[in-house]
Image (cartoon, rainbow, N blue to C red; front, side):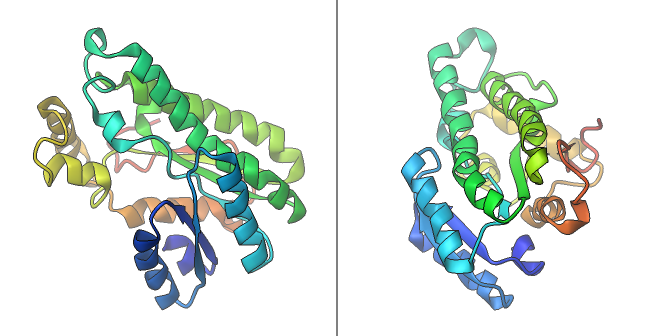
Length: 243
């Protein structure tokens, strides 16, 4: 929505055409154009097809926002999220690998199209757990910290081709799957997990972010306003964390 509000046409990738239809209707109400490209972010052919959808529909690709990646339910499971002595390290390692693949696959697929445009912008969205150690988050910490470092590596590697790469790290966001699991679905998270989120609410000086608060930061990094910014890691956490 934030990108569309700034004039971008949008390709929404996902596995549910029904969910995408609601988002597309909102985007079109703003006067922008949007299409759905089905596929799994971990699948090479699916992501190449999604990029081709952008090229064929809108004439090219300028912005890539890898926002999906990893299973929310798996990330919340006690085998992956919880005190280190009790987690299943094989399952944690699998989660980290699958989550990284889901972020990086779409970027690799998009690079040829970005090159054809003479540059572009990649904005990763990941967890603040990659910057701030949080007890019980071994999997999230390993995945997100790794992604942050890879985003910096890519910012250097792709800079000669005018492809900028930045990263946005978030904590609790209202009206998101994590919010709903913690506060609207009984038994979806552990009591320890829910109490962590309650502390986030209590300790955030500017309050808990809404999706639009994160979207606006992503849109800024994707826009020409940030043309000289690459390799940056921003944490819109409402003052909860400072770097």
